[in-house]
Length: 248
Image (cartoon, rainbow, N blue to C red; front, side):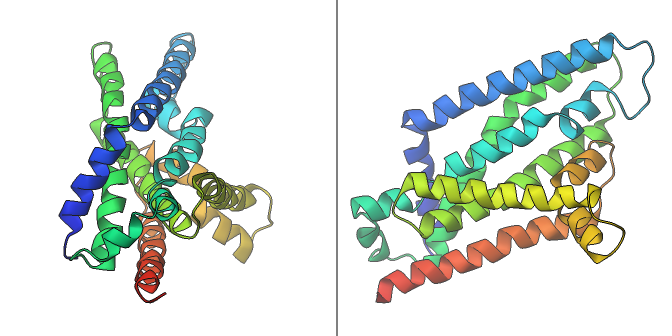
């Protein structure tokens, strides 16, 4: 992992000195703000609501805008990670530096993850606003953000791998979207397939079910193991790809 911290700093600086991260941050917060506002207005107009249908639960577990954000933000954050350096030729200088392939991959990945977390941080203000109007179940808040972080971490790892497999940022963006969308479609199978192995598999990988459960304070360790696998496996393959460039 030698040199990972230096790569992390370099990549993080590269993200935030360009308009990309700032534009994504503004657009992301506008979308999330509108989504949260519409949910609060809808919930406040309900004459009766169950314990599982509050604004926090609806925002994290039932909002389509959250899923659309993941589908767009994660590919956009990772599309340039390796593709841009390979196209510009700067990857050769990086590979000759005293840093291991694992350090390169880990440093770049952690920079995108840190940026992803920074984009979500302002949404904590929504919880503080709700706190002034009633009681907040902090267990639900914690599990909801855990879901957002674990799902996003897996998608960012997929995007990192896709960026390493092409020299085109657009191609990396599209490939990452296709993989994420494929996982999303597979998850919908839990509502389509009859009871059996396929339905169980679909339910296990379903981001809809995962976020719905976590938005109710339910943390299933099996889902966290899946999210962890979705981080480890793509990053492992990415390290192999980067290592092959040294000898290619």
